[in-house]
Length: 102
Image 1 (cartoon, rainbow, N blue to C red):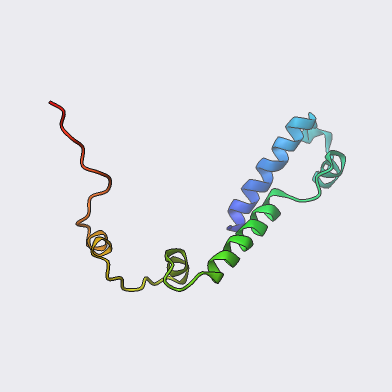
Image 2: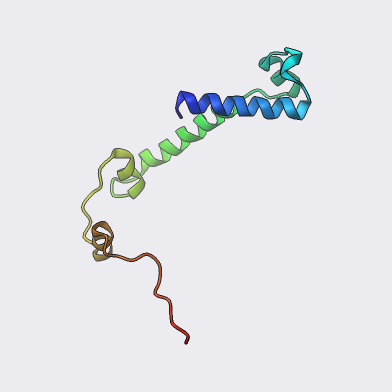
């Protein structure tokens, strides 16, 4: 998550908390104090970071032939499957062929 996105998420989160507790920014109460009153210990961005690390750990444990691991590493392995080759060459249509009923 970029710093810009992180700031947007934190701002939106605090806005939602302030609205739900009916505390205006004009009341000049710090975000930490509002969190303490509500009983929130962790921020949404910390939860996102934690879940991203869990996902990263799962991908790291995968075998090298798995697609998520290949995408993460930035290079795809050569595959022998005929359908995969058609997809890579742009020849394979997505979906199924529709029947004409007229």
